[in-house]
Length: 413
Image (cartoon, rainbow, N blue to C red):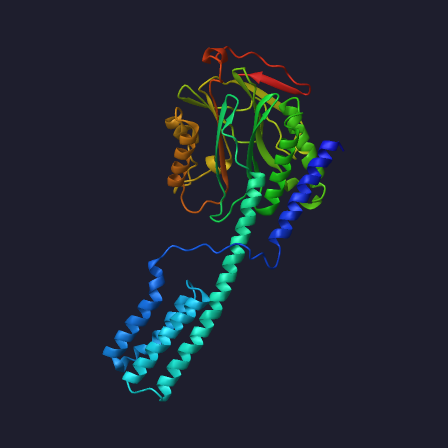
């Protein structure tokens, strides 16, 4: 096993074990300060219950509405602190005492029972409020850990890499989730700007583990790998060694990816697609899919499908954009079950700046989607601009057939 492979596996294993230990702690740290909540009309509901019950009891004493006044502290437990809940309970007790005195039932069995019931409900509500606060603190800590993990795995991308502007869109499937099985990265290398986007099979922590392995490999080897097939081959090797720790479901741990290399000063982009949805090339207001000329295996599937990696060279001049995305975008469904027509919709925004394009895409997906999303989504736009000190015409020459790496093939569109 190479030094690079061992280093990547060791780094990934340490990161995943640390993440598991933090999340699995029985009692999380309480160092997070409580954030002030904005005022809500819902906070007035317990007080409104006391007022309405008191008024109804005074005007219709025969209906004994005052027995319902214990609902006020019960409601307060869902939104107030322990002290606030006790305060609402005290107000309810005072109101009940006053109504019993007005009805001349104070000291009698019905009145005494009502007051005892209010006291019991108040104490139970205070306990429920305390439990709720503890769970809110725990949830806040877990979300903080998830946000930290996301910053490590899916750190913010640089918006400018030489003559490439980069923008990204990411959304986890769960409303409160911060990380998932979709991943991306964009980095400057001696070979030009290299990009990756991918989607891990499955969800949850196992998917995050696989994403961390692949991203770590890309970040470690993106400088030294001479070409995209070599980079994909290293990812396959690392994942193969990593999967040996999970022999029962090794075949379930795979990922589809797209690797892109945009060399500086050349009006081309090299694309290697390992079983992933085809990127979209936006050129002069037109949109076309960059389908691979030959299939390449997903990562960790080379033992079954072979290790042949096909690189396709496409024109990529100033003003062009390349949209990479996961199937969470293209497989969004409407009410009839129809998939989202990505190329058709994106055609309307083909000339928009990258950030505006992704914002419009996100809004359109939200409007198109029916029901609750069950998959993560990620999209990345690489837009070529004129580098400083260069003329646009210098990056508008015809595409030349590139060098074919050993053990791989390359085609020029």
